[in-house]
Length: 71
Image (tube, rainbow, N blue to C red; front, side, top):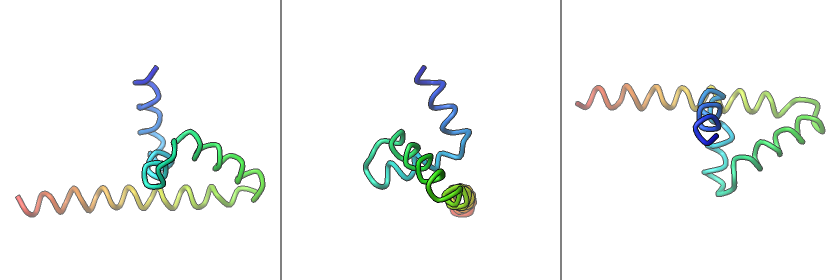
């Protein structure tokens, strides 16, 4: 079950896990907050989620290329 959860989190950009690590709270709680805020704010947190997912992918890409140039 743990492997399945890790696979799903990784394939869904890992935004909730990243935010949970940075804020020091469980990623499940961050997911719940996203769901609740999406209902209350009529979906605007989804735009924030997609922005953070894009930012994390760009950050990973830059780190990957930076490591290759210094080797």
